[in-house]
Image 1 (cartoon, rainbow over the protein chains, first blue to last red):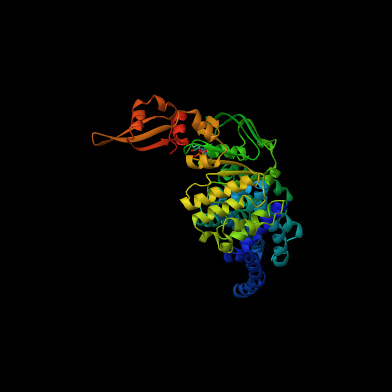
Image 2 (tube, chains in turn purple, red):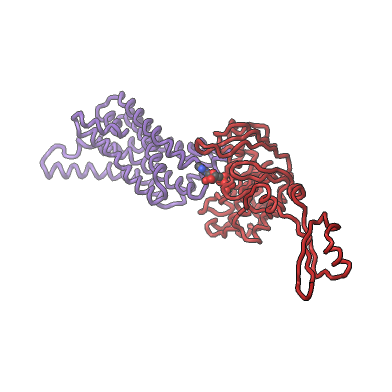
Length: 238
Length: 282
Ligand SMILES: Nc1ncnc2c1ncn2[C@@H]1O[C@H](COP(=O)(O)OP(=O)(O)O)[C@@H](O)[C@H]1O
Ligand SMILES: [Mg+2]
């Protein structure tokens, strides 16, 4: 445990030592502030302009969902950048033959990020929700989004050879947002094709208010993790 | 300390490490000597529990390494072939971090930096270090928790003669402090200077194992080479050191005081390696 805490402390120091990564931690708060205070103003303006009672309001849930994916995505980005650097420096290999071990290393990086992101991601939507999401929805989507960020992190680390590629792949992972959009807009059975994205099920859960969607979300995420594991461990754990 | 019995291992289905058995005693420096690609690093990775898919038995400190937990690493120090350091951090920050991973807080970061002459550079970033400085730092990183067993992979590899000499002195100093040291090298000189016992490794097999002295002595005897003049021409002759009495020419040259130069030529570990394995070291 001492080793895991030390390794996590070192991880936080590395994040803190890098301006861009520190900015990532602040980004979800800034985005929340903009959403919370600027969007309703814009809505009032648009309603007056088009002479309607609601223009953006029906999409507030979608905006809330996007905000709730921001935190895990940003933290995941920090984690991936630091792990790519640790791979370059040979640190990942060395830590595995220290009392930290393989599992300790993964936990101190990916595991802690998932936990941190979950906590952070409950607080931010509670303060900044536009649609008035219920706390249970917020908590569930926070946990599921953290799991999604683990999938994204494994995906990026499996394929990125360096930090530049890592950054490109993280941007590509923004495609996860499409899962929310599909869940929200596509009501035909074809919409379920987007179900390969775990985010689709989080979107379903929040829009349809049915907790059973947790199951396909977990299943799809674990399938991704299993599919990625071999490549991931060859890259990171050897 | 370490017992290896009938070890087999392959990265793929093909078996690479074949039927290796040996023991390492407490307090000795044990070397794997062999050309590049022989399997030295692979063997070391098996000993430190990085490669678990082996058959046979490998015990370190009485534990089968395949089944060890992370506590196993509290008491072994590892210096990989290439430095594994945070390039962005200073030397001191690196050592502080790595020592914080171990339950045994030794608090000897500055003493260690001092032993390798890095104290003046303790607060410089590792990325600004020369290759020799990185090697020294990487070496003391393996000592932060004062382990009983050290695994060093090519500790002198790629170092200039000065740095190589410094590194060898450091290794001998650790031996003097009672540590058991397992090292790999493709340099016969280093193996000879450092190792109490050497294992010749070629193509995943152990071809010979003994003290450097015995390995050299067991093989063909050392030779004597001498030069003399005959009819105004300089000529040379040679004979085995244990057959000087039979060399009539040499004996008559000595009696006539006609020897120009004479010296014995001991076999090197490299010659013996070539004799036994049929392979050159480099
Ligand atoms: N991770 C790996 N996967 C597959 N083959 C490997 C791996 N690591 C090393 N090898 C192969 O095993 C052989 C021995 O490598 P190594 O033990 O590093 O040799 P040495 O340290 O004696 O130079 C080489 O042919 C090398 O290509
Ligand atoms: Mg090697």
